[in-house]
Image 1: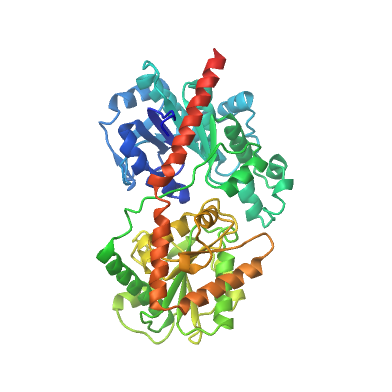
Image 2: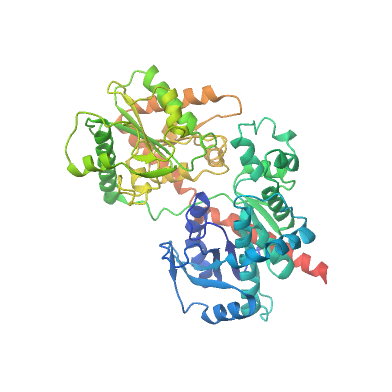
Length: 556
């Protein structure tokens, strides 16, 4: 550590800066506090300004911060930006950039990227243009800030870290136009790897035989793969988030990452002591009330609650395994406790159910179930939704005789969904066991967050987090706080059986053993705090700065 070179300034860009979409938001926003304590206003995040004319609850504008540069950037660099603070622990500086103005120059920008770096934008579609124009604008922000504040400072060390293919074009722009800045490219999942898994092709057994360029054509993701690959090869330091994804990068992108930057977290948002148990009781009561109103019955506190959560990637996140395991548990095992399995998975939601909301508001007990007593919010695609379709196929109808009930909550839980009225983390508190049987999961924040909230968790060894947990001596069984189930391309039925078995086992353990498992879960999560994992980022900064220094010397 003492021999490492560290930057004086850090810029970091992502589509998820002040824009909560998925796990990358959690990576950046939770890490910000640790870096902010060290770098203060010399840590600057760059994100897309998607809230023009509206208040972004994640962004606190500050018209005095960098005020003169904002004027200069607009006048001389054709940049329209808003500066403020990210509304997350640490309150780091954020620059949100308007990128709409660059669409008119899109073809010229893509031509330059092709001529300079061989980036193929010819086959672009979907969100490629939007992401690329933001990325280009982010690169210009770094260039403008550097020229205004830093160019005349001797020996100033600056790092620009770009996350995912969506920010690759900006990284390449910085390398060309501000070569003094050291660049880091981080892929949290490869485009081709995710596409292979999402298209039901075997990823792991045949990884050695896949050619990334060839598969990108077959799966129609050539442009995203191209910018990702060129960013990986041209960055001063290339990183990813787990050993399993590092192997994927080496095979599909042709460069093994220099550093594996495992994802840590801050546990400030986990209630302590008495507040924890009061919040847990309140959250359990709310979910039991929701379930009771849906199903026309009442549940006492002996009811076991399990859940899955995350992005709606049916196979990749193991949603299919979860449904199948609950169905097998319901039909094939003797259970002494009622089990309610919740799926917190945002889908194509049309709105909250008025009939359910009315029942909840009445605070009465009911003896007749509502129609479709497995859904809290109506969907636009009721007949074709994958979750509901598999429930029907597996005979999960939430009949009164069923010991296992399955409830789909298909919306983002922010406290304003019209039914639950609490956040996702509030709901996490209520659980007895969480299940994340992922097939494709480069890291896995959901199981890590679950452990932090003292909820024992099931994951797989195809998740980066699952592999890390095993490396820490955990994962053998649920008594260690986490059970890591072996998963491969060809053992789906075995995974389903193991998930059902572990759930049944946990339903039958004593209160003392459950308490010990919860303590073990919390203890393991402490090992993944950012204070322990931030060293991987310092290693990446050091590599990037040293390689940039060599690159610039060779260019002279």
